[in-house]
Image 1 (cartoon, helix red, strand yellow):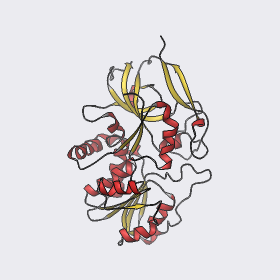
Image 2 (cartoon, rainbow, N blue to C red):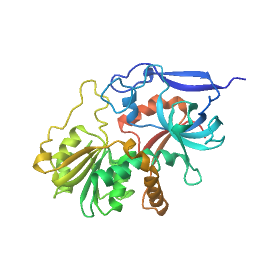
Image 3 (cartoon, rainbow, N blue to C red):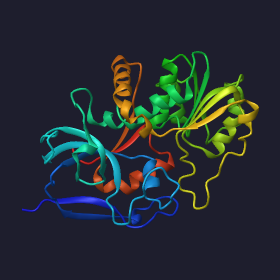
Image 4 (cartoon, rainbow, N blue to C red):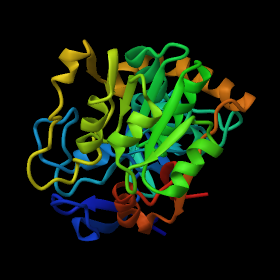
Length: 336
């Protein structure tokens, strides 16, 4: 009997917020892997802002856009079910760029083994995966926070932002998170140890920053862009460092992205603004995972996950990335 592989394919380029109609839900016969490739049963799919760029046709992005008809690209973890690669055996747990589907066949050289005895599989899409690597190196190498400095994080309740704030606390900084909604702000201060939280949906961000950062912001880790970035630019301390990780407020714009209007504050405050890509730190991923794993084990670091069960729910789960309804690392469970 032929095994069918259910998958989501890109049907058209989304305009604005991605819709279910932008994707085709298809079923194709499962194939055996060719030489050098591995068949992986997908267990968990990471739902990331980068996916919005992959389905665009912009030439200004840092990754090659998907073609119409391609299986939706995704960072994922799973288990090897067939292998034609010498480094992988049936039963191995792996992580890599897979797809929003039940089974993926990929070159073995594009996969890395992970050990489920060290942590549950979802952790390798969170603190021990791309968000953890991004937070660790983005903050410590690009932001370079010092003990006693004030660190502000936008998108602070998200996967990367929540880790950034906790790492800054571990390093002795004072941390202010910007998030949407009272529940998220309460989580930041009561569960994750942030010193203060600003609800951008209900508060004037600029006024709140004047209150919580009276001496200015030394490090700003930005995941949001737009008006939030502009508000923080007006509160910079001399010598401030701004880390640009993302600009999720801009990704679904139908027109051009809105850039920072207050950028001249970089001159006034002799500040720097630096963009980061996680791929630049990929060769050192083990370094970050080792340290982050130690912090998790000791209880110094907490990693929240928001898991939606069922491959068929991908389009709606993808939308949740942009409406602020998720709490922590958003992912889709495809198989147990």
